[in-house]
Amino acid sequence: MADEQLHAQFLANKIVALGGEPTTTPRPVPSAKSNREMLEAVLAAERQATVDYTQRAREAEEFNDKGLAVQLEDIVRDESGHSEETERILRDWPL
Ligand SMILES: [Fe+2]
Image (cartoon, rainbow, N blue to C red; front, side):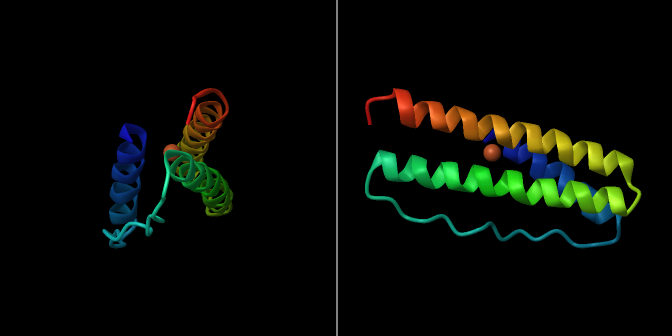
């Protein structure tokens, strides 16, 4: 959660720096009937974030903004770590 907040803060500042207006509407969160179901939704969201930020990093390269591309790749690293952490919880914890 702390990582996501830092990502959002960085991205909001970057969007403003580029002349845009950041959204304040989060993606919808699916409801869950169990801890396992909730963690599976978390894992899907972390994996999707990795895919999405990888694409944004590619676009930043094409836009010739190396600083942004590197930041986005750092975010990809964070999101990949979150996926692995969630996979471990789903595998090892008694849910
Ligand atoms: Fe994450």
